[in-house]
Length: 322
Image (cartoon, rainbow, N blue to C red):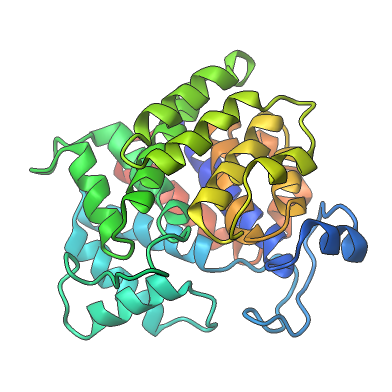
C-alpha cells in the first residue's frame, strides 16, 4: 500500500464533496441548465442545507471521514467507543445542519446515553442513505493494514458494528461490505492494470447479503468509457438519496473514467446526492491513482485543505503506511 494513495483517498473525498455540495438536490438537467459542466468550486447562495458558504467548502461527508480517521489514530486500533464518542463531539460542534437524518438521530441518541449497539433509529425511512459509505474509507484502509488482528472481531464483524451504529439495515451493510472491497481493490491495483470487471466482481461478491443491491451492482459490468450519463441514470432509477441509486451511480461514474478527474465531474453532473456521490467516487479515484489524479486548482481551492492533509499524514504515520 502506498502512502500517496491513502492521501489521495482523503483528498478525493473532500474534493468530490466540495464540488458537489452547491448543487446537491438538483437534477442532471437543472445542473446543465444552470452551471453547465462543473469543473471548479462554486459558492452556495441560500442553499436549503448549506446556506451561504464559500467555494471549496466541504460537508459532513468529509467531516465524518476525518472523525473516523481521528478515532482510529487516537486508539491505534478499531474502537467503537472512541468512534462513537467522536461522532457525538462532531455533532455537538457542527456549524451547519448538513447531517443526514438517519445519522443525526442516531448520534443524538448516543449523546443521550444510548449505547452504540442500540443507537440506530430503525423504520421504513431510516438506514437506506449514504451516511456510512461516505465516511468509511479510513476504516477500509485500516482493515487492509491491520485486519482484525487488533480486535476480537473479524473484519465483517467490525464493518457490521461500524455500520449498525447509525444504519441498521442489510442494505447499508451490503453497501459497506461493497465499499470496503472497492477501496481494497483500488489500493492494491495499479492504474494501468485496472480491470473494470475484476473491480465489479469484488463489489458484487461482497454485497451478497442484500440481493436487491447485489442485482444493481451487477449492472456495473456494462459500464465502459462510452456509457452516457443518461444511460447510467436510466439503469439505476429510484430515490436519488438512497443506497440503491446513489452507490451504483457513484461507482458507475468512477468506472466510466477510472483514471481521470472526469469521473468526479461526471458524479456531480449526474445530479441527486451530488456531494456524497462525488465524494464516494473521489475516494475510489484517489485509492487507485493517488494524489496526481487531482488538478492542482482543486487541491489549492479546498477550504481548510491543510487540516485534511494533516489528518491523512497522521493517519499514515499511525499505521506505518509509507
